[in-house]
Length: 407
Image 1: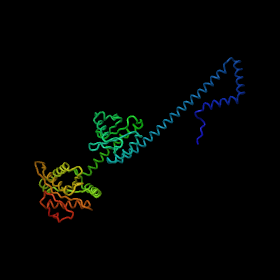
Image 2: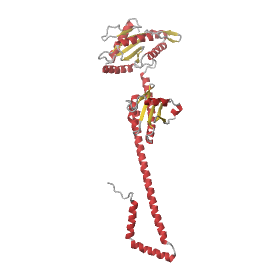
Image 3: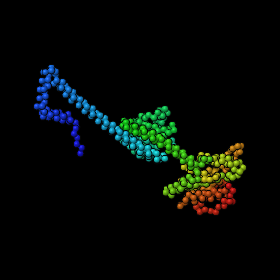
Image 4: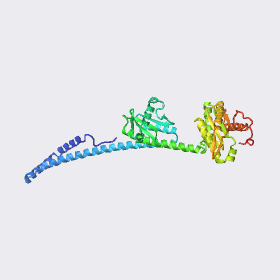
């Protein structure tokens, strides 16, 4: 237990102490007073009043010094509290920044914001919307427990319709009881953060403002990482994914298919007589044909269908949640669409055709087995005269040997 020798009643203590001293040294003081009186009479000076004035001034000086010391102590305590609060805020921001630095996907970024941003808001109402594929996606209050569906999205829509100069200023925008901050990436609004206008403390607003800057940087990093990853996984010529990514994605889709019992089909297609095209018109023209096929595949297939350049002039297409009949229909449609496009370069125009093999996932299938059945079906289509579709069965039939078929 700490023992204090001073406190709020120090003045009363000092007065009592002074009165006790007067009582103790009463006779001595009387003797000194008599001497002072004799000096006044002898030399004609006012010594006693002067001593009294000096005593009073000394007491006031001590009192003023004490008040000044108390004020300095209070200021130091306030600065210490502010320093501790700023240190805690900085620690929270550093933790948030570290979480954002580890977020390399949009979902990981969402989780980091959902976990840490409400802490920085210090209990104040706060919500976050991020833009994904042209739609607002809630990062907080996903279950609409606090704000009903469409309420926050309407606020965000009003904010982004404001003049671009207002959005680029970085200042908070008041709207429907919230101070709204715009997250911009590449000069375009990528998210909105709203914090309660009337209940947020200055510290909370400052922390949230700094956090929003960090979120903007992290969101840009996520986009750059996605672009780099997509570039590494895509074939530059056709814009389709490469073979390694195709097999990895196929394994993932097979796992999901086994878990949900959803159908899964693959299509293997090949450009007919592609070797002859290269021999007669040159490899640069052959590249033009491959690029045209890849571009057309991106145009006609669903976003959920994975398009891959499997090797050479072979393309592998993953069709999630597609049974055999549906995959056969898609294959026939693709054959018609791809065979109806002319490719022209340097005065040469051809209309390439494709042969297609289709296979549907069977119980216990691995990625290599499913691709092998589709490839066998493709060879069957080649052997049948090309420019046609063949469907693989669960038990592989006899196929024409590779050496017999001139691709």
